[in-house]
Length: 175
Image 1 (cartoon, rainbow, N blue to C red):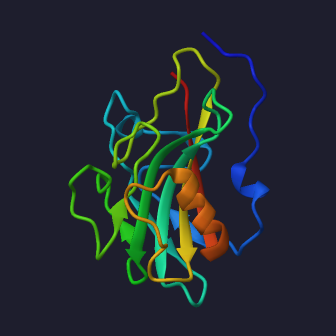
Image 2: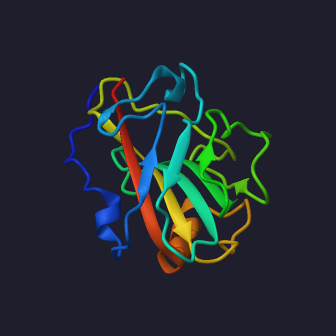
């Protein structure tokens, strides 16, 4: 069943511009369908991510996964990983599992399912193709200033004032 609606814009073009840097993944190819591992009902595993050429002055990273195509006015947040140390340039697949070992003082905030982990792609059956924005945000402070109970909106608000650069890779999925 498709819910007729327009395609939402790239959410990051609606924010003040910041320099881009490079993110790559063994699991997500930009503009291509996600692997089964990143689908909620098939693997529910956060992807491997690596990044480079980060802006000078980066003191930490925040990693997010956002679906702007969810049938809500606010999209759907699948993953929010905060306070990743500045010397970390890669995350292994599966690090988004609840209770998993995270680098340094990093922690996960609740996603839109209400859990503090990675929630794989799970669009409504028959709906339009959904885009999943995996974003590494270079942060100019060692801590973003939120705790694990922060909503993705509060994390995003803090990022609006503390982001030095952004690296984006987008996977797609249709059920």
